[in-house]
Image (cartoon, rainbow, N blue to C red; front, side, top):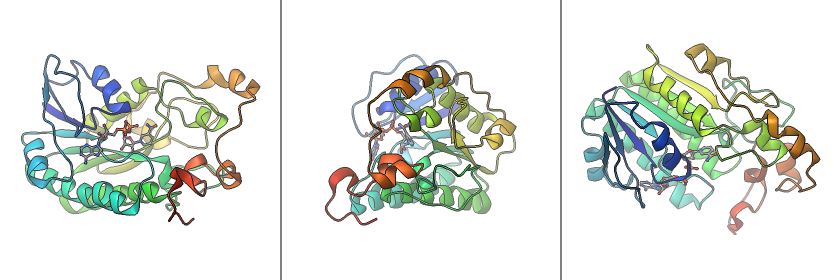
Length: 269
Ligand SMILES: NC(=O)c1ccc[n+]([C@@H]2O[C@H](COP(=O)([O-])OP(=O)(O)OC[C@H]3O[C@@H](n4cnc5c(N)ncnc54)[C@H](O)[C@@H]3O)[C@@H](O)[C@H]2O)c1
């Protein structure tokens, strides 16, 4: 990997991952539609709107591998999800193939399977059960990744990211937490491991209380260095209720599965 592209580099994960990736690859191209910090050594900023084909073609020129974080990261109206997370995602993959990109790490989400009950252990091979329109777009992204691996030979790692924030806040996020260091390690596995076709793995740290079996990630070489376990006692003792309605509290996707999430009037479960 000589030149790696990081999309969504102005977002919550992207801003922090940029720091983790400093000096790792000879050239890191960072991109977002929004504000972005100035370029560091071996970094290049190429601003782009992922829904603009000309800008995307320019963005992908001379790129070997992509960590694709850019897009809508929570629930939105269907028209927005369709435009950014589905139509533009297809066009992004097509442009990546035409540009000769070898690897893509796709930021999928646990919300692709968020309607599974909390009693169920998942390993990435189960059928999709999206918990919202946003989760549905991640199901599309995983299927798109399979198609581009099968049909065009791209190597792709779909990472069902759990909860990538500073620390877990609730019983649910104790299981789904991933540190930025571990998520970056997993993205590097996706870019660097030899002979990757397409795999679906969990973006989680080494958490004892998880619903997710990450054997596939470990087989590919992922070795998480951090764990949510040391917050478990404090979270168990907390009296702050977990957000979400009765449906949300029973399923893995939590509040994303609540009826009325985001307050859009047309939401139908
Ligand atoms: N944060 C998490 O715990 C979590 C969990 C599961 C999945 N994910 C996925 O990881 C990725 C990053 O998440 P995040 O929390 O940093 O989200 P974020 O919303 O903070 O960042 C996403 C970035 O994408 C950019 N973007 C949106 N539309 C764009 C467009 N049309 N063109 C170019 N850029 C555009 C935004 O400006 C933003 O900076 C997302 O794909 C999200 O779905 C995150």
